[in-house]
Picture (tube, rainbow, N blue to C red):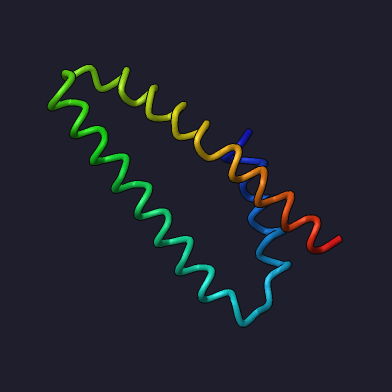
Length: 87
């Protein structure tokens, strides 16, 4: 649901609400944040394997749910802020 429905619809809604002059900056920011997230995940997975053990499946499950929990509240606050600003 999140990858196929929520994320594309939400991203397009935000993209359309931006000033066209901000599109390039916002795209670069999104790429930067994505790269930081991927690098952080890789570092955490490498650390986990080295210090805890080779149970990669368990580490991926933990990382996924911890990451989702860490993103959900800030995402909800940001969306609420943007919606109030445009209302």
